[in-house]
Amino acid sequence: MVSIVFMDNERAVIPPALRKKLRIAMWLGCFGGIAMLGIGAVEYRKSRKLQAEGVEVPGKVVSSDVLNTGKGRQSLSLIVDYEAAENGQGYRKKFTVPKTIFDDGLKAGEVSVVYLADDPTVSSVGDEVKANTEPMAIGGGILLFSFLVSRGLRKKS
Image (cartoon, rainbow, N blue to C red):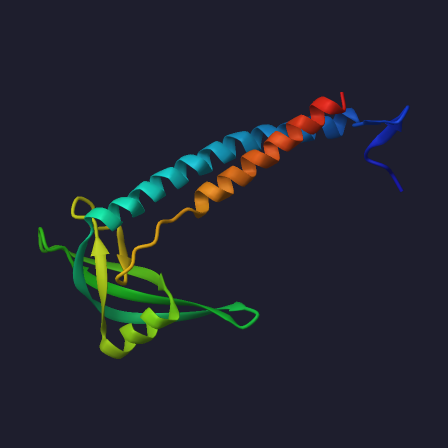
């Protein structure tokens, strides 16, 4: 078996080829993490603006989709038509929704849509708009990984 890390007088030594690959991974992680944090910040700002300034209109359920994601889980989607109150333009969008909204929407044939007046494509279904923080968490995790790799490379020099 080939060892990746060699011991030299009780100090770990990383071979140059592996060190180069780790540096590349570190820099890609830095740039990717910063990009994900930026994307996350924009998404978070949009969802907060939607919570504060969103316009609520009824939307007609056009169709539904159930996707089995494995291990007994399902992803439920509704395709909804809604009309912007300001300009009367119609929009059709696919929303991934929780089971309660899915069942109520199918039964009633319509759901509540909240959208931004200045950009009606930014919208959400249901009474409660949730802030999307997932991209920021992913970006933070990637940056943490890059930081730990850089610390490991510094200590093992």
